[in-house]
Image (cartoon, rainbow, N blue to C red; front, side, top):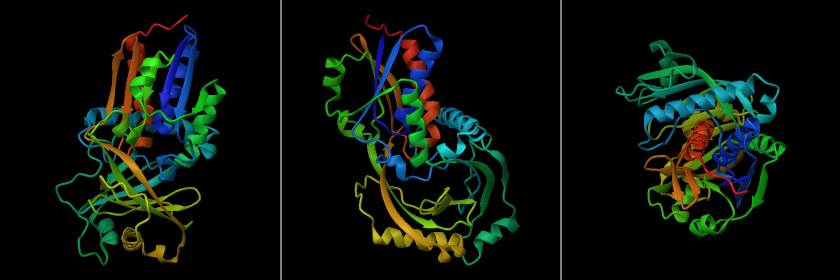
Length: 341
């Protein structure tokens, strides 16, 4: 039997575990046991507080061609869920989206516009609607349709799918990866610890990207609106609330709500959509995204064991998870790991 441990129960860990488990079960050539080990599970992961809007974001110097493939794979996966009876349970919604930029040199959605539905440039008249009362004018924009997959719903849905197929779950904090790889009985270890890899691997290329958002009740908001500026705001409707954002403060480890950031979020989002002044404030949330110089997805041999790294997804955990999980599986298959009898 091939014994696989996936460390980390965020969306990338769970997706990787499902891909491996379902492949070997469907192939019926080799018995497999897959276990997810994590200190925290949904609803206490970083992703649980995010809006889950599809879109590559904060990925450092990660190769665009890889990001395109991973993002496309996830978009197709979300399409399958949306067309199924599981869409409600998984929190997958089809959402019209507008992305705006005040930088004339920027082309919005340059490398991923072929993935989303109906991408078109905004006309001058459409831009004028968003430019009313603004000192810094938007110079270009794009409208399209994509998906939200709210992690607070998607993660329980994926965990249920994993456990239903016989996947194992263990609440455990791994503090010494080298010892765990060396001493455990697992043949394959998949590291999906996100920001935790900074300490677990002494990886100084990993850093926090602090994100603060506010959630409001505004059930008349159906379109996501995002300002692509470095200090831009965004408005993303979810099924039961609307997410107003946000911040992306690199190497900031403060998990407390900041009043100054909250004011920036509320005022900025109201300038994009004035009607939000009539919304009901629900709560504020802070999470630390796992930033990295570039996403790490690679395998290394440790004796007769295989260690696969899959971390550094920045603000794109949901957007990339299914595509990255596919590459995790391919790395495992290419390694031809021999299972213990």
